[in-house]
Every structure is written in C-alpha cells, then in structure tokens.
Image (cartoon, rainbow, N blue to C red; front, top):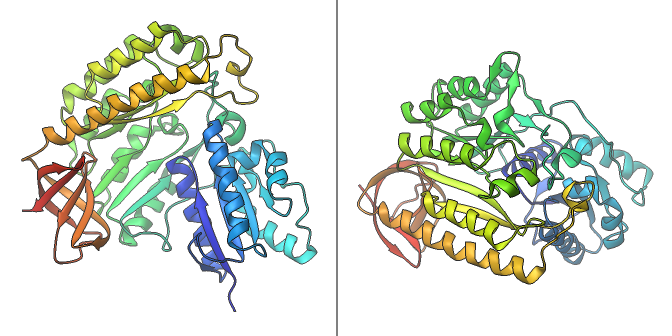
Length: 430
C-alpha cells in the first residue's frame, strides 16, 4: 500500500508556496496526500516563528498530528524548526526536524532516516544557504490561483524581525527561470499567478528588477491575472504603480507592510522609510489607482510605544482607504535588537490597542465593500459551490459570494456586487 502524508502550512504566502511544492514532491515519489485531520503515515508541518502566537499555533498542530495517529511520524520544517528545534523536540521527541535551508532535501533526509531508523536525531539544519530554491503551486493544489516564488531571504535587519536569521540573506531566482516557471503554471491551467518572496521588492538578477519581472510575466500569452504579494513600501516604484494602472491583467492590489505610523517608532524599528515616505507612496497609489485594494501589516506594542505613538498609527490608517490589514502584537524574538531594548509594553495595553485596530479594520473593510455596491468586476471563482453559492475574488480583492446553479471553479465571470450581508459581499452574474 502507498504511504500517506498530510500537510499543514503556517505563515506567509511564501510558506504556502513551499508547502505546496513539498506536496508535489511527495506525490511524485508515490505518496498519497490526505487531509491533516485523517490518519497518516507522515505529517509535515511547515512552521512560522514571526510571533509568539505563531509559535503557539505551530506547537498545537504538532501535538494534534501526534493525536491523529500516535504511530505516525511528524516532520517539522520551516522557520520555527530552524530557530526552536529544542522546543520542538520537547513537544514530540520522535519528530524529524528539518531546518529552513534543508527543507527541499527533505525527501533524501527522510529516506536516510527511515533506512537507519534514526528518528531520535536532534534535527537536520544548517545556519545559512545562499542558493535560491524555486517553488510553485503544482498539480496537487487548486488549479485556480498559483504562487510563484521569485525571491527569498532578506538583507534588512529590522530591529524586531527574526526572518534574516530563519531564512537567510537576500537571493533571487534567475529572470529567465522565473519566466519559464510562470509559463509552466499557465500551461497547467492556472488563471492567476501571485509572485511571492520574503522581500520581493528587492528582486534582482543582473540589471533586472521586480518591475522588469512583473512586466515580462504580464506579457506572457494566456495569463489572465497577476498579483504581487507583500512588498516593502520603499521598494514600490512609480514604474510598478504605472504597470498596475496600465495593464488589465495586473491586479490593482498592493499589500505594503507599514508596521507603524510613528516616525519615532519606525526609526527604532530600523525600517527603511519614515512617515513622510509612507505617505508619498500611499498618495501615489491612491491617486493612480483610486479603487485598488490596499492592505498592510501593523505591529502593536513595540517597545517604548506610547499612547501618542499608537495614535499616530491610528491617524495614518484613518487617513488612507485601507481595505484590510493585519495586526501583530509585538513579541520578543531571539537574536533581534528589539529583544534587548527596554520599555517593553505590558500585555493588557497591547491587547487594548490591538482590539482598537481590529475594530477600525472591520469598519474599513466594510466601507470598501459598500463603496463597490453596484459596480461590476471580473471575479475568479474558486472551490466548489456550497448551498448553491460560489465565491471568488474581484480584481481588487473583494471576496464575493454569488448564487449560481452551475459550478464555476477556475472561471472568470462578470459580476455586479449587489449587497452586503453578514459583512460579506454578494453579487449576481451579469
């Protein structure tokens, strides 16, 4: 009988892309992929360690895998595996830990461990990897939206961030290889490709930069939609904004992780921009693309963040038409500069500020959806219908639910948004 394997991915779209690539690798080697809720021979957990909450979720899912099948084996990889191998071994001494830089050697590692029955090994990982390993969504995943990894690692040393330690330094895929991988995804039937990376705006291959790559992939025959994942504000160029404005197959969607609206806190965070720089970028996006989806990330309770600093973040959010954003409660990460700073904020204050921003986000998201009632969009439908209703995303990233008697998975249809119900956008086929 074939051996079975289940997957669980945490964190960013880059992690999701890499998990899907691992999934394809197991299928190619004769494994059957099953749901994580089922009994499996192997459970692969691709972890994130960006916050304490991420660590906690990863630990819980490792325990859950052991409960699902006490006789199964848990393989833990990703950023938490790279940084917290000892803690993982305390949770599950029988787990196989494969660090970030060894992730795509997992198949050889698993073979060697099985042959020698050496599951008690402390972990297999290295401290650095300067080689770019490409990944892309493959056949075992949905044929609707694909993730294409074009960059990895980061040379920014922000004071709060563990990523340079867990993923290494900046490195990019070769320009022509990225183009070829995009062509393969289009040929496989994907309607939409999302470019991913840790710091995608720093993509470079010789003289080629992220603007060049976006333009070249947009030119490919058969590509209907292209999105750019999270991109640092200081790397959003005028040319990139112009490309999004001019080209119908590049989606009007920018996710720029700002982290704070306070110039003083941004300086302590060692970000590569200040408040004025953020406003210049946001003004340009909003002027050129007034109905674009605008997302961001904000860190709440960074060390020494006062009420005044926090309200500067609030004022920035209120001043711009953010359609969604993620809030992260600051937590100390080992090896970071912020870990050694004084003035850490108490949990109660962080929770209060986080709740304030959550409510503001809900209001912003609802306002954006309501502002689009009566407008028509192309919607890429995904998944199967449920109770006669199918959903998909507009070009400007509004999740829209449409009653339909037929299955529309992986089809793009014209839809008019008609109303909001239970904070969800509903529409009709035009």
